[in-house]
Every structure is written in C-alpha cells, then in structure tokens.
Length: 313
Image 1 (cartoon, one colour):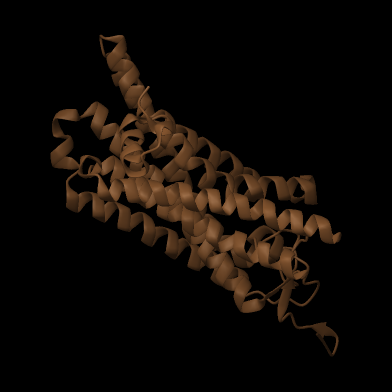
Image 2: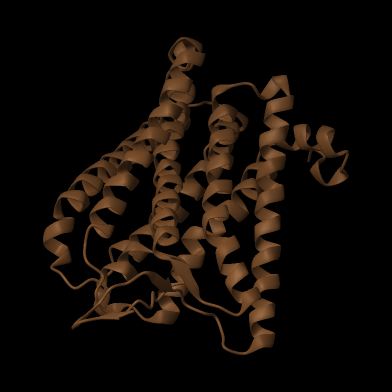
C-alpha cells in the first residue's frame, strides 16, 4: 500500500483478540453466544409488544424501538469480529469501516436520544397523569421516535463525514475490535482537532441538552413520587423508572469514558473493556432489565413462549 512517500489506506486492520488459533475459536464462540442471546432477547421483546394489544402504549412503543436499535448496534460490530476470528484475519475494507462507523454511531446516538424521549414519557405519566393520553398520543409518539432516529442518523453522518474526510496516510491498525472514531483519529496525518471541532461542538451541545433534560425530568419525577401518600403507589411509580435509569446510566458512563477520556490515560486493554461495555452489554441486558422488572412484559413473554420463567412474582 506504499505510494511514493506516503501510504494510501485501502483497508484497516482491526484488533485481534489473540494470535492463537484455539483462542480465536473461543472468541468466535463467545461472541456468537452473546450475539444470539441479544438477538433472541430483543426479538422476544419486539414480538411480545407487537402481538399483545395490552402493550400498545407509548412506553412499550418506545421500548420496542429501543430493542430494534439494540439489535442494529450489535449486528454492526459482532458479525464482522466473529468472521475475522473464524477466518483468521483482521482486515476490514475502507468502505466497510465507513459503513461500520456510520451505522454503529447512528444506532448508538439514536438509542440515547430515544432514552431522552422515554424520560419525557415517564415525566408526563407521573407528573401530568391526567393529561397523559392527550400529550402522548399516537402521532406525538411516532414523531418523537422518528425524531430520535433522524437525529441519530444526522449526527452520525456528520461525525463519519468529518472523520473520513481526513487523510489516512500512516498506520492502518485500528486499536479496537471494530472501527471506532477515537481510534481512527489516531491514524490520520492531519490536525484532527481543527477539522473535528464543529462536529464535536454540535454533538456535545445536543448530548448535553439531552442529559440535562433527563436529569431535570427525573428531579420532577422524584418530587412527584415522594408526594404519593401510599408506599405501594410510590413503589409502582419507581418500578417503571428503574429499568430506564439503569440503561441511561450504563450508556452515559461507558460512552463518556470511551469518547471523552484523555488519550494519555488509554490503554489497549482498557479501550477494549470499555468498548465491550458500551457496544455489547446494553443490547444484551436491555431485554433482561425490562422483562425482569416489568410484570406486563413478563406476562406477554409468558403467553408468547409458554415458559414459566416469566410467571408473575
């Protein structure tokens, strides 16, 4: 790939988990189990909500969208990594890397924006319960979900566009098991901070706005819940918020650590662990969190599968 005094990158080499063939196979099997578990769990959630008319409410409509996004994010990164281990290779084409960055960021950012919408849904349900059906009508829910998807796609296109507009003229070894922007920026031979300033500023403002909105919503929610006289009523209100808060906390904490931490503090092992946390854990545990903490979901899954595991407590 050498051309005159510079290197034109036509493909990237992803981080391999091991050079030992037996460990490569073990990595393939491990990721396959994780992928199939995430696939089955999210498909069960989607199917249960789609088939059970009792779950055709705003909260479950957004949850179904969240499961679709989780399926998408897992499908962007895991199959390629598994295939590379199985075929004993590390390569991914330039176009494949562009597609991976764009689609993964689209799903990840839309996930966060949808969680913001879900915080608003919980706020209206608890703090403005008398107006819930009017505010969270079908049209409004579709518009908010579409807004989350479109915002994720546009933000991702902005980041992917500014990243791959930079020249890659050096090393092509990505220090991650999938194409990740922080690792790709290390491979460019230009002033990445200058060209990325606009994209980073736009994304930071949008994400910060969403974070502040979630925090303010939950401050109001907690105030309203604490005013509920009965302990059973408070428990019921809190139980609808705990799964959402868990997903928000996990996504924000791992995302900040992956994209905001100083490069001097990053190590290959730490980068890998954080990437696994924010790219693989949410799609895997999202169905578990919502199905185990929600009686309606458990009831729908029990009817769908006939499994006693989902019986009501």
